[in-house]
Image (tube, rainbow, N blue to C red; front, top):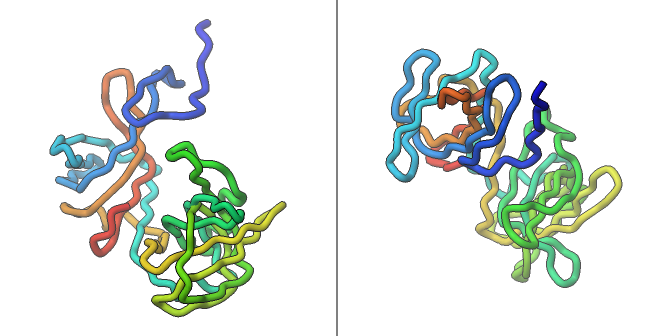
Length: 218
């Protein structure tokens, strides 16, 4: 019997053997072109229409813009960042997670997307603000412990099981609120990102879709 292979890392659009007669996953970004029952048409940035079947187990999440006031003590966040010479992380993006996702992916790890980039999921233990510009960046998911005013450079202390990191969030760094959504958000023009499993016959099926709200591109 031919052995099956576990796919550890899937590159978008790549194809590899997969269980149950399917092949590797495909990452799709674009705008909803049409929705018909359990079928979703997505228009990619290249103008191509990709048709994806939505699983009966479909989960929809939403992303919306948030401000520095969302970075408060006790918040669980994720930040992408790069480590500076002094060991402090400089954020390029921050995601604020709902309480239902607290603890998900907790920890600090490198990211393969960009050399030196990191991701940290953690709880923020403190927040301080200053007008002094910061230097570098990484990604950290954590709970925020302090509050800071808009327009300031924020320094967050992020704590996770087994460690602690400081991350600087400059004014203007995107702060995104992660929310639970539902299929009603899938309307023509909505910005979406999804991962679909591709079967041997070429058909695509997804169980998770992220939708941007109010113009946000997830």
